[in-house]
Length: 297
Image (cartoon, rainbow, N blue to C red; front, side, top):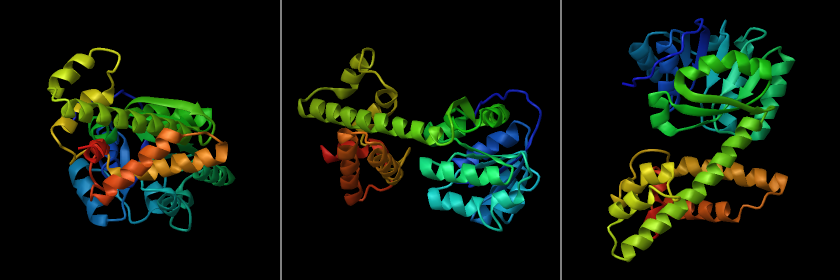
């Protein structure tokens, strides 16, 4: 169990839509922080298990979960999954009261964030795009980093609530800015993981004790989160945890689509995306992203 401590704020009525590997513990932190939480998940059994673990309540539809909530959080798979829990007669927007805020933690496109933000305003609602970084362990430990786009006043309302599962919740700019910031994050990670994989594979071919090497260079300019946390597991050939290759390819697809629109040149990112395709061809769809080293061994 996480040793997370919670900031004391006035309890809120909140909903959480999507109880995957990220959403399940995130919603749990909200409950432990004292908020009144109602959850929705496509698999009702998982929602009932969450209620058993954390109390709170579950609902049969996103609309029912969002009814009366001050803040509705969501963490689902992609743009279409997000639309499915937001729009329509049983979607969250149909159940939200005027002035309530929808916070989307899905890694999705900037375009869908702007689309749903506009739809929210037509209903007197607010929409914050708020993708996260930190992976499943960050969600479990309540130490996620959240990048937000949307109205400043709406952000000020949700920021202290979202701190229940975060170490930093930051507004980057207008609607879509959070998703664009997450794309920057994934571009940086893709290059770092490939560089680390090449470095370790080179050292292994050279006959070096790579645990000792990382211990030395990890105290210098080469140090990074990836080196500290994934370097040892790369050396140990362990990839059955963390952020899956399939998810990274989804994210890099969003990045490359956005780059086509804005004219950014991403030669390394495009290459690493194809390297991840090679890992998928090896059957590594659910391996951790650090499995890039498997191409080099």
